[in-house]
Image (tube, rainbow, N blue to C red; front, top):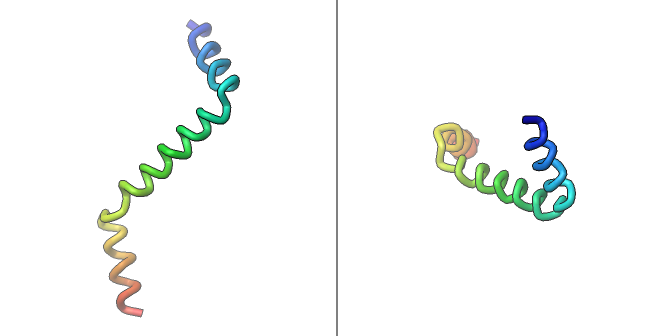
Length: 50
């Protein structure tokens, strides 16, 4: 059972740059997906009132 996480970790370490790029891309998609949410609308409303 512990062999599987070890293999995943070893694979990710050997391919650090592509894995880092995937994580960065996922983070960017998450941030883009958050635009248009209720909190974003509140921030926009506060900016308009300044």
